[in-house]
Image (cartoon, rainbow, N blue to C red; front, side, top):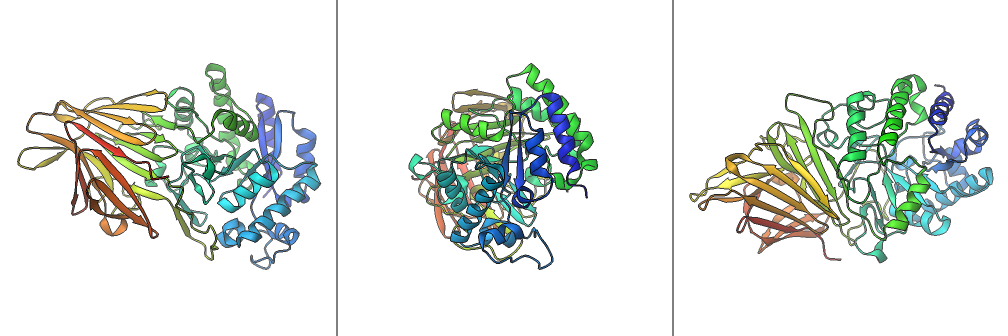
Length: 506
């Protein structure tokens, strides 16, 4: 494969549009080959060269660490070889030092932007504190892609915890002082249930990134939907896919991006510039949202749409499929929860890196990935109970709406039987207000899952108790009641209000 051609062709298109850009080079491409010399000659002042931190034989040799990949390979994609979590913490720092030192020797300065598919807290803190890195990039949530799963992490940008690169820090003193940006431009609607056999991102080699309808929907979300304090996405494509696979969609995406920039407040800038802006504006992780209230592919049969809310305390996803509406995802963050492989090393390919779930709509379902949410699926459905204790699951009966007010997101969803549900997502709480409920009826939410797959322990007083990897956490029901069921828990609104405190003790 010609690895140089995509770099030249991408450069031509980016320069034709006058866009800034960040070019991330792996260590072997820094120290040999045509890439660095070409970039140094061709990039405008608005571009930058950064580091792609993935281990290979040349980097291991430079760090004085024995190559553990296949003997006849220069680069080995397996998790224990390619990523820092496969090495002891001291060796992670040696690898980072060798990469940064080699970059400085070749380029003349340390890179301001560093990214990888699998950074850990030890490496992130070392880069931030010893090299003044201004922006870091880590992989999006994914399911078993490239030999590893990431699930439950913040959706776009955040200050990571000192003990968990996949988690927001709650307190400022517990955060690493440089933000992590999630890579790839994730499809917020369909990726979660792994509906497609391919990664559904903005990458122009995949059908999603080649879909003009999806690209239009993504840019519309970025430019005009409620976004909280920051709407962020990374665009681009690795050269290793080859130019023939990306050429048509790459140009299409840049053309549409140019029109979006012309007609909105969207800004295109290098990664380190976004990092500087982030730190000037936010002392802690800001509230962010991703909202698509129309199917991104224009589907007419069982269309799907979605609402994501993110604070430093939790993330939540309210999803719509056909006439079904349900809570699909709810994860919380804690300064006390260490990432897996913080000190231990990954010794095998095919690993899970999962956060603290209150509801994991994918992994806790009887058949993970089954998009038919009516048979053994993990979800939070909205219910109406009568005086005899019979509970009816409510479908939605009108168009949902969403509007933001500072760090709060208000969502209104008309439900069956004249019930209106108003969801208020704020930094530490989720509040559900049900109006139009008759005197002998009680509205609420039923959280259900396959018990053996879940982390749910039980109900204790007003607390929903969970345990994952021997770590205990809880959700407080501040208004309403909770009782366990055979497949989860039933939450009943008190005086029409159900209020959950999701923030974990700091």
